[in-house]
Image 1 (cartoon, helix red, strand yellow):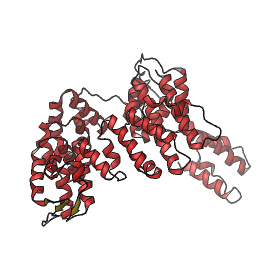
Image 2 (cartoon, rainbow, N blue to C red):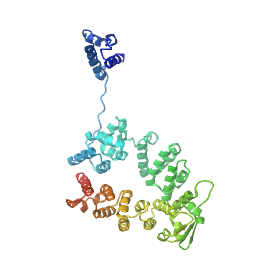
Image 3 (tube, rainbow, N blue to C red):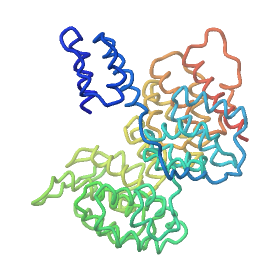
Image 4 (cartoon, rainbow, N blue to C red):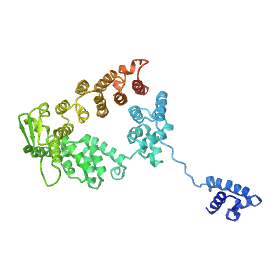
Length: 461
């Protein structure tokens, strides 16, 4: 816009050095400044008119069609107390507690008030975990918003029943479609997955295997074996993990056959020969063999609790223990998990192995670890415990932290425990007993969080 550029240039230089050229201005501005003799007054009058025009001047719109009205949502709003708590959660920016709150609402017949949806959508835009439960509680109003703001497209109700969603939908829509079909029509889901498998990007292939992990079955063996030769390492690792969950696979048996000539017992010693080959590191290949072979392979060398404590020769003992842990996690073998935790209670594989145990065994093993490990070591372990926690484990951890004194690592563990224990633990004595005046800040924060979460559930009951 030449008139505006001329006006800005004059303002920058000042009217003493340069005066406004009225002939460069629109006709309406020329008439307005024609009878003004002061250059500064001419400039300010022209600026007032042009600035207003740039902000609001335009031809009236014609044939305007109003936006469609959002579909009716007959669900009742969350109760008033829950609505107030939502405002506090949004103001305090606690995405983990907000995620839990949305999950509670999603399990009820309530919906969130529409005026809160924009703030919730903005929070979910940067925190993907919020999107699923938010889409559920937002309902048709959320879908209406998602259709009009590309940043909130995850709220738009996907056409799940449409045959085109698998081919043309977003990744989130395709993941939901695949998960739904794996549960309702597993054969159709697998047919769709195999038909597009070769054309999917590597990260999407790995992502879809993650969706399949909750529905893997023996018939998937051939598909997963083919995925073991995938170009992407993440896909190969996922495929090996899923194959490890299937009992009696050809893959597992072949790994055991390759491993058999490499292991020999001599008294209390396991003699291991590292495999050699033209390609790849021998230790890496050994890890793959041990992690992929059925754990029943090792019964000929002794019971798990004995085998894991044997002296190892020929390779680092940690290589075997880490690979046994991987196999125990894949095969969900509780006996091996208990043996490995007992052999190395403070090891880095202990937290995930605890997730293999039954609820009662989890709590008992946690109590055993509390008695064996220094407070600092157990506090570090708390951060890595797999979730969700069972009621038994949550109670054991609350009992433990109730006995602790002020310590930096304990205070960090308290934050995790307060937010991760299940709802059944929220009436623990830690939350219901009045604090003494000398209670430390971390203990007060722990109690406040437990009570905050308990009130969330009560308000939405």
